[in-house]
Image (spheres, one colour):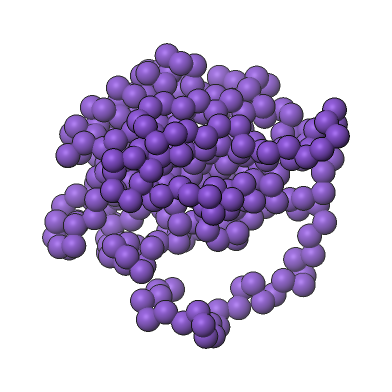
Length: 292
């Protein structure tokens, strides 16, 4: 299998969904011209991660999977023969969801994921949370790769990436909308290292409130047979400016690494981890705005 080329679309949103559609399609075309197998958007691209306080306005901004906005990216994926991970505020029967859909190079939706760990301490307290994490076999021109997704705050919980690893993920796509500073980058580095998988995160550039670029990709390969010491798993980190940043993932090298190294699911003892699924909370972690 060839290397998988992942385009991190670190781009600034426009003032409405129609302009975000036009700009998103344009940047997908540019990514394909640069050889991308997969193009990934920042979090909630349809709305530019803007959540009105008024519930009527919030619901009006939400769209369905079969909307013209989402389906335009399905059609483009087929036209370009390139997978596209598009993000949007999804209309739901109750409250809207923070969603990513992954279309393969044939325009088929192979992954439909809603953010599980919504930021209930902020604006996302007005959204519905997703129920589970999912992994799919993504057929790219470079070969088939097992792909899962987390969205922004999901990455701050080791359980998110762990579940995706246990379900077979080799690559996790992470749409994002927050400041990517040293500690959040360290989280991603840790998630990739401990699960022996690749993580590609796409943020909005500096200029978008509360965002600063620094989209990144980690390949999860900490040790190489020919090298005496461990290595940094970071394969690309963008600066703060808008642009397309290409992560080239050596997927076969990652697969060989996973067969011989000690992390992931190689030496776990899940029978001893019962407390991890206990639902009780104690101080100092009691929060009045926590939702199950």
